[in-house]
Image 1 (tube, one colour):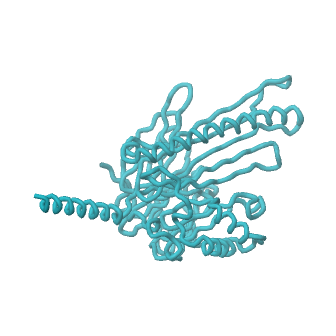
Image 2 (cartoon, one colour; image 1 turned 45 degrees about the vertical axis):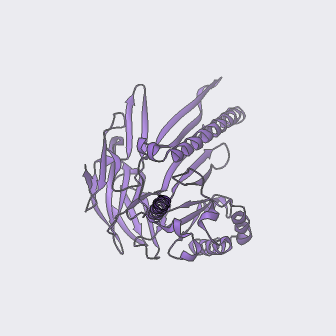
Image 3 (cartoon, rainbow, N blue to C red; image 1 turned 180 degrees about the vertical axis):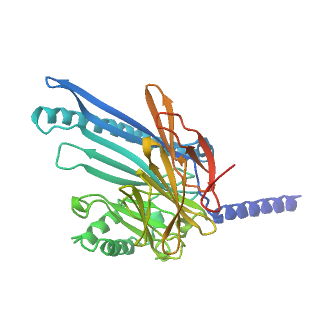
Length: 406
């Protein structure tokens, strides 16, 4: 009887260990269900010169759907805590700027203008290994120019805990050398005085600013951090396949199919074939057209769109697309479908859909944005006027880049 019990216990332990091994070795899969709600506020004042605007604010916070809350409750809780913390800070910033605007108007009768504040979020990676996103902040004050900053947030989807750089990178000294080399290669006209010492200090204290991408890791350097304001935001992307020995293998694993939103006007560095070869993608709004630049080769699409929101889509069979959501005539948004080839991009079609979701609630309009991070299942809205309530469909990317429903 004791032998039978011991054998059963041993078998149970072996089954448990095998199950853990399967889970640990399971290929990552993309996660969907992330969105943001946009909020706007205009602070006004009145003095002897009349009523006037003091502060124009626009901000957003990351949100998750019911499936993420059910399957990843600790992640959902962590995101909510981040939102609460940022909202308290945003309120403080708004009050400070409002006071500055009042003083500005009193002291400068000729050149007064309302101040502005924006806080936005953008996904970079969302899968069962990591959820990574950017917080983007801009402050337009009474000074010579506004100030902006990007901050990366990297979360473990199971625990909701912040992923430290030390968990991703094996050798931080070698990492700093790689970042410095990449910065000098990407920005050859910058001097970067004392760059190595500064980055070594930040790496040792785990204060480098970064996000995990599907194909690598991107570091962000805000104005004045390593270069002048005029040089703007600087980025350095290190691909996993370029130096695999530098990174923990767990974070190099990427979902077979994924989607990665990125900012127009800032290049996205990736590896479309995941072979260590760099691919640089840029999407730029032009007068009456949209320009897609892939590795220096331009494709100009005759589309009069503004406020571009591009997404890189990589399918399991190796196909790569861009979905470029843009604002068209009468504020009706649409999405361009572009296929990315080995050497150039090719326009395919225009979809009467947008990732913007609006709800008509008098007297205001509620505006939401759905993030495309899983091309095999995502939310997208049939186009409609900004003042109307749009209808959301659940879609996937088809064989030719088109939407499939079901």
